[in-house]
Image (cartoon, rainbow, N blue to C red; front, side):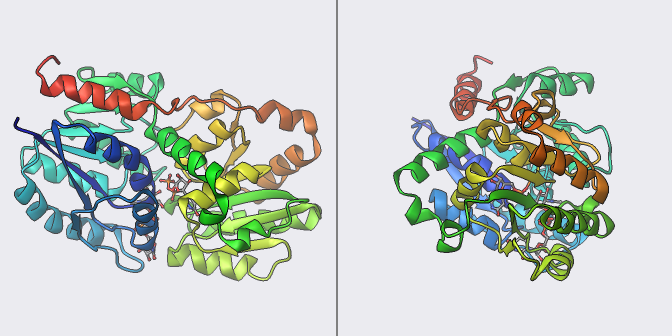
Length: 377
Ligand code: UD1
Ligand code: UDP
């Protein structure tokens, strides 16, 4: 039996996390010959995901450079992806999300006339500069892709409004499949996966988990976020802040300078995926500008304050588990203080909801792809 050649391309931490369960499940299907390419747009942060999930990487393009600019990264991606596509000649190229790797891979796939599947299609903030450049990356991928796997009905509607009506399936988000895998492994042996520094935190205090890295938040907004964190630990002696700091030099400089040495603020290197899931579960509240964390927190019933002006993930907000608070120091402090002092306000947000899927997204995607290849779609 002739197998269908499927090429996965990922480059950053969130793409690797969200594609890991799909890669594993597709490798179990006899009709697919699965190849995996990591562009290594992220080096250490993608490698930790590759190690945790045991992903078989056939091509490692090793593209990350410290402090890389978008044009230079994009140029390196185009140059390095062309030979991979020529080598594999995939029947299907699979990309995920909205990163520069995902965009460049989809464009490269189009140049080589490969059919393209887009996982996590249709999210829109409707603001071209937020998230930047991800909103435009994701929109462009939709216009290059042949098969669109939308996580929610809202995402499907967004695609429809842009005239993309064929070959769109609502399947949930594979981030929930990955989350369930990690929870399962942690349940069996957390000591294997979680570093001592985390295990020995003072859990009699309330843990506030903070992450920030978006390009549009670099500079002034990130400084506001750090000032808000200073205000929060100053006003609430029973709060410990855990802040895994993104390795981007423009994040490191500001965060280390403003929060290094501040009492009850733990600045950590990026955590491994199981560690991050572990600490999310033990957190009282999460403050973040991340996309993926906005999807995971509702599944864990953890209130999230989203430090952005707009979000392409409205479902968590509508479910009442997430709240958009922007990046103003005073507003972040007030919203956090309200949840720390008002048990009713907290309880209203702290309920588990799964607007982004039930952990069966990969099975649904594979079901669709089998139909596509058997000619039934
Ligand atoms: C990228 C994605 C963003 C995603 C984020 C996930 C784009 C345009 N942006 O942004 O959508 O939310 O990844 O974290 O694709 N670095 C390291 N080691 C690493 C990773 C990064 O040192 O393992 C440093 C490097 O100096 C690198 C810088 O971080 O140049 C920025 O990385 P880059 O991938 O360009 O942008 P992110 O902000 O991480
Ligand atoms: N994450 C992680 N370690 C950390 C912080 C986050 O493994 O120290 C995981 C998190 O669980 C989520 C993903 O990384 O699945 C989100 O990545 P990020 O915030 O970098 O990117 P975004 O989702 O904003 O594109």
